[in-house]
Amino acid sequence: MTRQPIRALLVDYGEVLCSAPDPAAFERMARAAGVELELFGDAYWRLRPSYDRGELDGPAYWRLLAEDTGAEIDAGRTAELVELDIGLWSRLDERKLEWANGVAATGVPVGLLSNMVLEIGLHLRDTLRAFAQFATVTYSFEVGLAKPDPEIYHRALESLGALPHETLFIDDRVPNVESAHALGLHAHRFLGRDGLMEEIERLYDFVPAPS
Image 1 (cartoon, rainbow, N blue to C red):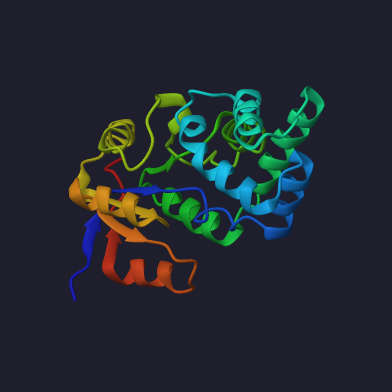
Image 2: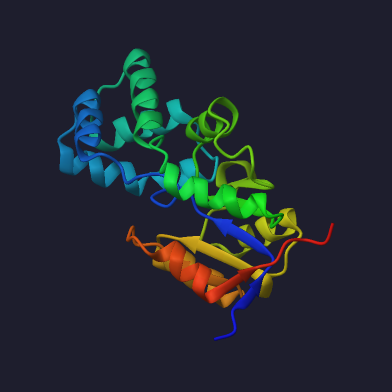
């Protein structure tokens, strides 16, 4: 079977390059907020899109969640929740990151495309320098757009200097994968299973940029 040539790799962060949130850690956040777990989880995810798009910073997001749930969250508790949230999403999957860095080492440009909030994004990129070997990082909070909006894919491709048909995209969410497919990218949904990287190596041929 002839493998499809790929000249750029675009990967998601949440539950692709990082492990899924620890349920026990999520419960600790709910207790810190003083909100029953189910109510907390509903508000946490329902209010997240505005935070992802950079319309809110951490304190504003937690104030909104407090208003939504009827909780009392003071400034000290807000700072604690921001730190707990950073910890929740900072469990890097070293195996997947090593694979992406290995692709980058061959000369193929690798970019991150993530729906990401301000405080977590800065921690990962600027403090941990988790993506130091990536060519580009496209965060939703910095561009004011979030997947599956097609425009954020265009932004990421432009930053990579890549065309859709020569780019492989990996994400864990169906709407994001479908949006990428509609734009002409080779998109794969990551389900946390072993073997995806081997499958990609079987289907695609990473072609480095000319030196």
